[in-house]
Length: 184
Image 1 (tube, rainbow, N blue to C red):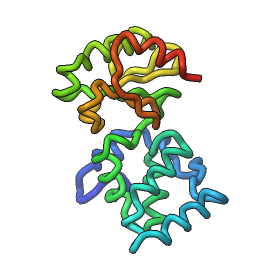
Image 2: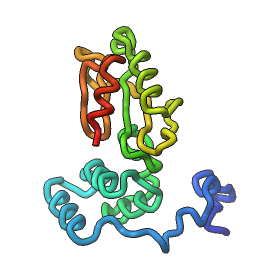
Image 3: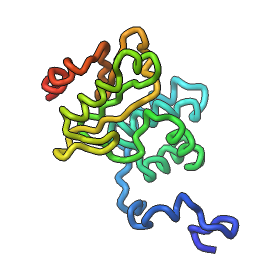
Image 4: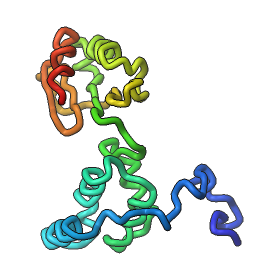
């Protein structure tokens, strides 16, 4: 039975990817040196390794910018879990990037309270000012990606956005240009 066949069926996970695209031989481990020391310290604060999965994934994302299939396998190995279990967590939470992202990853809350307060106009202004043109598509210069998200937890400060790890409240279309100019 081939590596890609599971129970007589082709695995959709492996079949959907070019097998050379995730060659384990070229993966550079995340958890080496100081990052491994950080992980070891982190693991001491949790009752078991599985309980440390979310912060472990944050470390991967901080170090690599996203969580690749190879990184999922590495997290599974260091936490003594299956890659399928780790992937289930990664795909459940929208906070983990499953593909490379641009330098400035912009999330805009567009749920009902923010929508009533003009979130769609903020989205339009961000797409126009960044020249991304479309949600989820990187800008031509590769600097910006704008996406809509469900609730950033600041309904009283609509419209909130997050640029990478920075949370910005009370964003209006008029403020978008200045916010983008403030980025390095």
